[in-house]
Structure formats: structure tokens, C-alpha cells
Amino acid sequence: MRINKKLTPPLLKVAVPALAGLLFLFTACESKPSFVNHPEPDLTVNYEAFESAGCPKNKSGIRSCKSDSPLAALGCDEIREPSSLIGGLTPSYPIATCVVHLTPGTGSAEARAETKAEIEKRQYFYNAGGMLPAYIRYVILRDGKFQLIKSEDEFREIYAPIESPEEALSYTLAVRNLSAYYGLQKNPDFVYNADTIEDTYVTPESDGYRLHLYSYEVFGCGPHWTSVVEIQVSREGIIREISRTPVFRDPDEDGMCVD
Image (cartoon, rainbow, N blue to C red):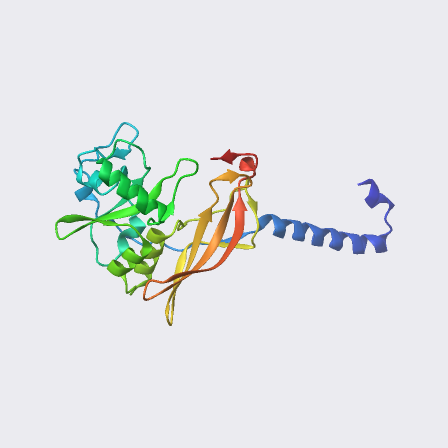
């Protein structure tokens, strides 16, 4: 107010619009990023067959497989119900996530040794753990029998060709450690590194599909960014990562280390 009193009328005519412009720029910056939302696909996974397969749920909700169960014989220490977004796979076999911890006591000694040798040869999809590994595989119920799927190559043999956007989404989420985000909104506590944040979507291309997915940096020391990941999947099931760009993070996690 004291400054305004010292301004002459000509200066006031210049300063007031300039101030308004600065306020507009500040407001525009505060409103960024903008968000673009898309509907989540209505998909379901057939998991019922695994609820009575010798891997009972404990008080924590974890389904650890008993040593004499058919899934322990396949090398699964634990099974998990996959995300409903995996439900676009064709053929639509009942499917469960098979988690391998390589802990002693599950399955026979021969089965454990075989599973360990396969894991050492990277016959798994990805490691969902940190210092305590959780190797991800899948089990399907096919022709009345449980069948273990150990690698991306085996997965491709069963589910390719990829013939719809929904199948492209399900296939990629199963094979890669990526996430689909829907209903994204601005969190005033987050730090953003993009002007526009868009929900997951799939775009058909001449030779397959392009997917807009996300990846959160869980392990290691902060900052823990969430990145947007652009993926191309061919109709033959070949997945290629096009780009990976950090877009937002929670600054409260900057000092956090996760093993």
C-alpha cells in the first residue's frame, strides 16, 4: 500500500496490469498439471479354482502353499489373485500369480532345487521384492490341470496374437512390472514434473498397440518418483519400452529408503 501511494498516476496505469499479469501467471502455475481421465476397463479374472488348491489364506490374507499342494509341486511358495485388469487375456483360462521366495520347506527337495536352478536362469517375469526376492510367475488351469508359466516366451506362446486393446493391456500388465492408473487427481502435497497427467489408455497402431502406463520406484532411497511409461506391444506379443519419464512424487518419501 505504501508503494502505491508513491506511484504517480501514469505509473499506476502500468503497474496494476503488470501485477494482474503476475497473479495470472502464478495462478496458472498453481493449477498445473492438468489431468485427463479415462474410464477403467470392466474386466474380471477367473480365480475361483485356486481358492481350494492347497494354499489357504492366513490372518494376513497371504495364501502360502502347503508342501503337499499341487501348486507347491510347481514351485509356488505363495499364490495371489491377479488384478482384474488381467482379465482381458485370451484364452480366458483361470489364472493366479505364483510367487517364488526360494524359502526352505515348500515342496519336495527335488522341486525346490529345480525351481532354484530355473530362477537363476531368469525363468521368471520380474522380481516384485527387494532384499527379500519375490519372483513372479503364473499358473493357469488348462484342460483340468494346473500349468506353470515361467517366462515371457511361454506366456506369448499361450496368449499371442494380441487382438484387442483390452488384451494388450492385460498382456502387458501381466508380463511387465507396470501399473495402470485411473481417476488421477491433483494431490496438493505432491511435486509434479509434467504439465499434463493422463490416465492409462491404449491406442491401436498398424502393427499392434501403444500403451500409456505407470511405474512407481518402490525400492532404494528417495526420491521415489512415479514415471509414465510408454509401451509398444506387437500383435505377436513382443513388448518394447519406448520411453520412461518421472512425472510426480511424494516429497515426504524423499528421505525414505526401502530394501
